Every structure is written in C-alpha cells, then in structure tokens.
Length: 168
Image (cartoon, rainbow, N blue to C red):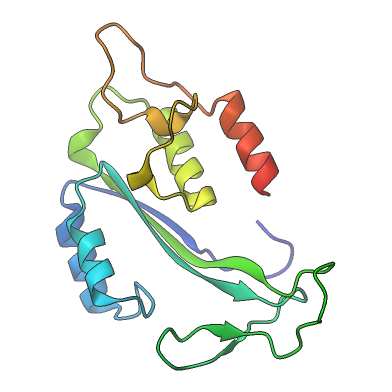
C-alpha cells in the first residue's frame, strides 16, 4: 500500500456467473467501465476467458496531478503544463481501477497461488491476451492447452519477474 491515504483500485472477484455479475455491477455503477465504447464493453462482457481483466486507465502529470479532460471524440486527457522536451516525462500511465473477474467454473485442478500469480501478472501489465504471448515461459500460459503430461506453470517465472521489473 502507498504511504498516506490509499484507495483500493484493484478488484479480484471469483464467480460462477461472470457475465451476469458484470452486467449487474455495470447496472449498479454506470461508471464501472469508464467512458469506453459500448461495443468494447459488450465484447468484454461476452468474452470466453477463464479470467478477464478490465483496465480503467488514464494519465497523470509527472507531479501526480490528474490531467485535464479534453472533451471531443475520444475525451483524451491533456497536460496543460507539458515541457517541450523529450528528456523528461510529460505524462505517466495510471490505473484508475482494474477489475479481474475469475470464472469459478474453469479453475479445476488449479492451486490458489497459481491463480494469484496469474491475476497479479495480468493486472499489473495491461497486456492484450488476445494476441498471445509467443513462446515466453510465463504464468500467462496457465490456461493454454498442454500436451498430456506437461505440467501447468506453477508460479511467476523468471521471465515474468524480469518483465515486471523492466516495466516498472
């Protein structure tokens, strides 16, 4: 947890009815998916993943101040105090909230620490899981089909830890 006042922004929910839960949650909280395109939200609701992740992400100025909403088509945020240099960051990617929804019906044979490592990896990286991860030795292979006798990844791999270290 951050020093000082910290507000939770990572939610991990395990349910036997992920689509139903998300629809009810969205109805109760209209801002659940930010102001994203309805088609993108619908595609997320109907996805057939054992674990699905939604990122409500934005940008902050280097001093931590929220950037001003520009309005218009994409409602992008603007840094009105940006410096004219490439030697300093003018904006930082920030997660307003991350929602990880786990389909309880698809967890057979998994251990809690495998699920926790997978959820941590997907929530901290904002990867597009539809693109695949190539042949990287990663916990992200947890739900991929395997040949008979091949064991599922047990925890974050050295590759995963190095990737997270480079990212952060």
